Image (cartoon, rainbow, N blue to C red):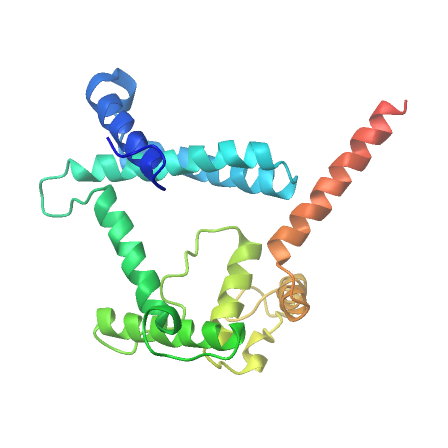
Amino acid sequence: MESADRPGAAVLELVEVMDRLRRECPWDSEQTHQSLAPYLLEESYETLDALDRGDLAHLREELGDLLLQVVFHARVAAERTDGTGFDIDDVAAGIAAKLVRRHPHVFADVTVSDADEVRRNWNAIKAAERAATGGGRGSVLDGVPMGQPALSLAAQLQRRAAAAGVPGELAELPVRQEAIGESEETVSELGAELFALVAKARAAGLNPELELRRAARVFSDQVRAWESAD
């Protein structure tokens, strides 16, 4: 086992624990990517909740639960024998290589002046990667998970589009007239207003998903205070 004072040594211990659980625990041994999917989502939200509340001790615990999901999925994938398998080293090596590739100002001879230039370089390198792996130009929106919550989806789509230089007027959505009826090319007035609010939040440097979560948390606190005052 690695020296305990070496950064990452405890992660290697977690990998060993997961290996043994996969072999010897009846529940762990029968899990699949699909059966683990709900836990991945739950742990992500619980981690975000701890972060929102500023509970740093709880955040540490939730990050551990989230890390477990990464290690668990990698362990399941390592068992595949159809040529699609990978292990935790492949996962770690992949993200490390991506970080090196997208930070040429740190790992190569590129010079940058500020964080904005770092962001522009990142987006340009990312676009080149998509084009190379897709066999063509591809879309700046490729890879955006359409199943995520609508507010964060709208923000990610707008952010990707803005980074690629998409004209801002494309975010001005065509409003559906009630007399015309349903259409995939138009949205309700409320839908257009919500989409515009996302753009307004981004322009103010705010994350609309997190802002609405904060508002919901404040409302929850006020309701609980009202209930306890009776």
